[in-house]
Length: 333
Image 1 (cartoon, rainbow, N blue to C red):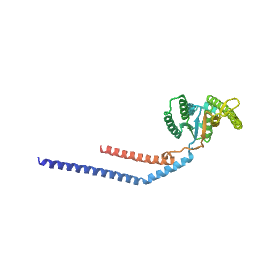
Image 2 (tube, rainbow, N blue to C red):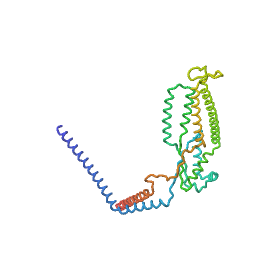
Image 3 (cartoon, one colour):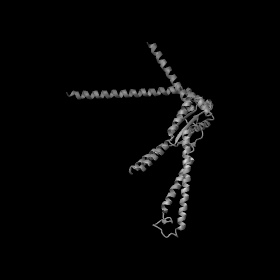
Image 4 (tube, rainbow, N blue to C red):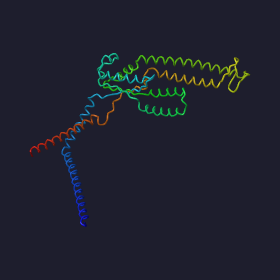
């Protein structure tokens, strides 16, 4: 019984010694692997360096031979609830480009040759989307403090509709020289929908009529206030502060008239802004200038081609190594 602990300690020492030996062998193999890799790179350094120089030269030359892609970003805003139409018509144009529908593009004055490499896409402007989402949540929190009335419901509906009409980015990518002209023709086609053009016309007509009526009302209010000012000293039957009794015995609240005039002026200003913006169903906020499509670092030819050549050399060397080992195995058998 007394010899059992001594025997156990000896076994533990043997196990630890074996573990250290295994770790030492592992480090030795790892060091040998690094040395072989270093010798391999040293042996083939000239070849690898030559491949890098050759690949860089080829990539640099292709930069002048091949045509780089250009793109134009158009920031638009759909009006009159035309957001779904906007995405549908962009999908329609994209599908016609893929199938090369010559009849469709001939009507727009676009040749099929100019559409080679042409692409169109659309996405919401992210900053506007995030801002709209935050603003909508904040607005809903404010509305929760009020009672559920028809007025609040109308305000909420109007606010939600406004939040859905965000800015969107239509991107045109192309290789041909006149790609920006094609983009303008496609934007004209997007805005050629008769239904929405009629809505724009009706909305513009209503706004003009409202502006004219507001101006008439403002003129009438100015006349009433002018008469009030001129007759104030002559009136003997003033009633309350800010009120005057005219000859027809009607009470006039000057403060209310001034508030109404302010609201009419504000409404007129809003209508004029609306008229300036609402010229098309899809308003073009900014039609960008053509610029080169930016590429990721490893997608550039001057970087990609040397990497491909070096990777091909490594693969070729690995296949030679496997072939050598296979030949040795066959010779041993």
